[in-house]
Length: 320
Ligand SMILES: Cc1cc2nc3c(=O)[nH]c(=O)nc-3n(C[C@H](O)[C@H](O)[C@H](O)COP(=O)(O)O)c2cc1C
Image (cartoon, rainbow, N blue to C red; front, side, top):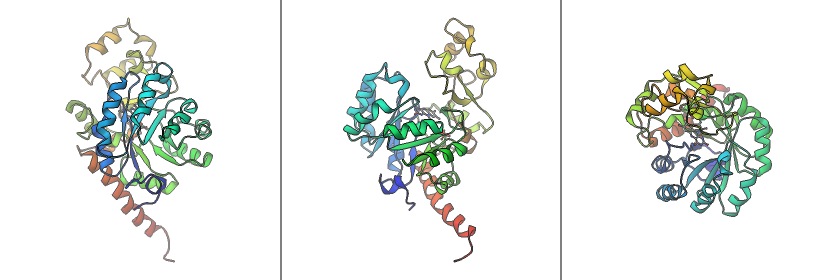
């Protein structure tokens, strides 16, 4: 077994956290990840209803510890969502894409640990000052919304800048990836894309087919899907999705996709048609080539990282 903060202090079998992915990771995926020995998380969109959150939490709890992910930028207008998350009592609440400072004390008062995804040294220092329990260095390779610095430089910068445990997110979808970030000093890996072809996600088979066939060169980091849905995501966090006809035409022309535009009408007429609609994935999609259960993904990455690290270490040094 690998000893890191996540396994020694949080009791996980594998130092792997299944990312909260709104619209994709509900309680079924979270429970599967937790049962496999990681920590599964439920993603909540900015528009989720509190009763849905509570219902999902009740399902996830049947598999053991679980987490919930919320978007900080949405919470000013959605205090009800934050209150529901406190009531749900997850082991971990991920508060990302904004400053977690106003929320940490209330989580701790409810015995809930807090993680936040950071995208720069300044955000990491701010998160540590806020008192979060885990910092997620989320690189720009990541699927979904993310920042502008790649995982490798960001992880090194954040590990040097803070003393709070750090996990790496963005581009990790193999035993090598998990082993690599642990060898560098991270407490584990926070994985999203690696789980996207698993049947436990909310993706329909047609979206899963897109994921299975997409290569690492076929993603785009864009605001266009947020603007065409009129979602007020901050400019600092574009979303990484599979490139398609819609991004080829409108990425970089975000001002032309507003509610009265042709692009807007086209998009909303073609929901579920993935030449137009979005499938958020990271660059590690190039490693996702088969439909595998979430349990298989977590165990293969966790167990594989142990074996890979042992073999690699044995070859790197002369015998003592
Ligand atoms: C489909 C999808 C949806 C996501 N939704 C959320 C979300 O709701 N909240 C959040 O904090 N992060 C979200 N993320 C980002 C993940 O938390 C995580 O940082 C990312 O998946 C890690 O990179 P990877 O995809 O390369 O593994 C999402 C990622 C994906 C792929």
